[in-house]
Amino acid sequence: MATAAIHGLEHETAEHAHLFPVFATSSFTFDSAQQGMNRFSGKEKGFTYSRFGNPTTQAAAKLIAHLETLGLQDESGKPLQAEALLTASGQAAMAVMMMANVSAGETILSNSSIYGGTHEFLKDLLPRFDVQCRFVNMNELDKVEDVLKEDASVKLLHLETPANPSMQCIDIEAICAVAKRYNKLVTIDNTFATPYLQQPFRYGVDYIFHSTTKFLNGHGNAIGGILIGRNIEMMKERVYQTYKLLGCNSNPFDAFLLMQGVKTLAARMDRHCSNAEQIANFLSDHPAVGKVNYNGLPTHPGYEISKKQMRHPGAVLSFELKDGFDHSVNFINRLRICVRAVSLGTTDTLVSHPASMSHAGMKKEQRLAAGIPDGLIRMSVGLEDITDLLKDLEQALQLGYEKNEH
Ligand SMILES: Cc1ncc(COP(=O)(O)O)c(C=O)c1O
Image 1 (cartoon, rainbow, N blue to C red):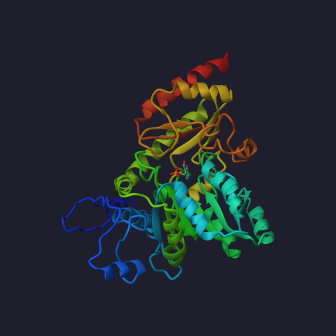
Image 2: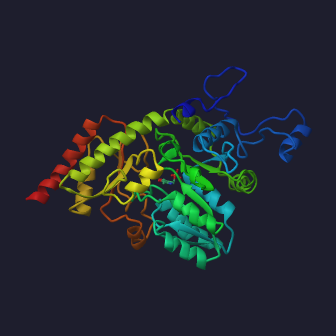
Image 3: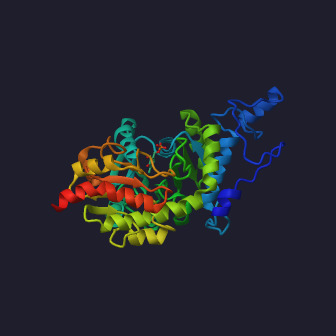
C-alpha cells in the first residue's frame, strides 16, 4: 500500500513532468467541430469541460480507487475494478451517491452513529424529496434483518466505521451478508480508516466515500471528497450524470494537493496510529478521565471487530472527563500544543467538542443515541513527538484532577 500510494500514479507528459501537473483550465479545445461533437456524444474519449472531468482531478480519483481495490479480486478472481469521482467535499460525495441511488418513496437504513452532517442530510433534507431514513444500531444484526424483512422500501444500508466521534465499529462483513440476502446496496464512509487501515470492498460493499479533507489529504489544506463504486456501469451513467448535473466536481489545485498528501499516507498513518494508541492508554489510566472511546482498548466494544477488519484501530479517539461538561471546557481551554479546531487527520493534533461543533445540527436525543454526550471531547492525534503531547494533556488535565481529588 505504501508503494502503491507513491508509485500508483504512473503518468507521462510531453514535458516529462515528474509530478502530475495542475491542469488549471475550465475547458478543452477541439481540433474540429466534429471532434467536439464526438467528445460530447461519447464517440471519442477526451476532456471537454472541467465540471464534467479534468485530468488532474481524474488522476487523484484513480489513485485513491487504486488503493481501495489494491490486492482485491472480483467474484471471478480477476483484479477488482472500481470507478471513482473526485468531489468538492466529503458531503458532495455522500450526496451524489445517495441521490443517484435512491428515488422518492424509498428508504435508507443507516447506523445511528454517523457524522453529524450526514445525519442532517438523511434526516432533514432527503425527506423533502420523499426519501425517508431509518436509524438502527447496526451491531444488532437481528434488528437490521427485522427492518429488511418488514420494509421493502429500503434501498440501501449506510454505515460509517469507525464512526465520528463515538468510534463505534460495525462488522462490515456481517452487514454485507445480511444486506445481500435481501438484495440491498451497502455504502460506507471510510474517512476515519482510509484504505491504508481498512478496505471495505473486501467484504462486498457497493460504494465507498471519503472526506479527503481528512487523513487522505493529511495537511488540512483543501476540502474534498471521493466516491468510489464497484458497479462500473452505474458509476459511468447514473452516478456520473448526478455528479455532473449537481456540479459536485473538485478542482485541479485541490486534487494536486491531495495527490501529494496521499503519497505519505502509509508513513503518516503509522505515526498517527502509534501516537493515538499511547494517548488512549494514557487517558484510560488517568484518574480525571471517565470513558475513553478507542477501538484499540481491549475494554472497548469495538476491539474485536476493529481487529478483524482494520490494520490498526486508527488515530481518532473521544473521551469524557469525570466532572462533565464544565470540566471538558476547562481542559480544552488549557491545551497548549494540541490545537482547538474541528476536522481531523492533519499533521497537528486537533481537539474539538462534537456536541457544539461537528454534531451541533442534531437534536439532543439523537445526539445521545449516537453516543455523543454533552461533555465528549474528540481528538485527532497528530504527528508531534508523543512526549510533548502527553505532557500537554497531563498539564491540561491537572486543574480538574486537583479539583476532583480535593
Ligand atoms: C466521517 C466524516 N464523513 C464526512 C464528512 C464530511 O466531509 P467534508 O467536510 O469534507 O464535506 C466528515 C467531516 O467532518 C466526517 O468526519
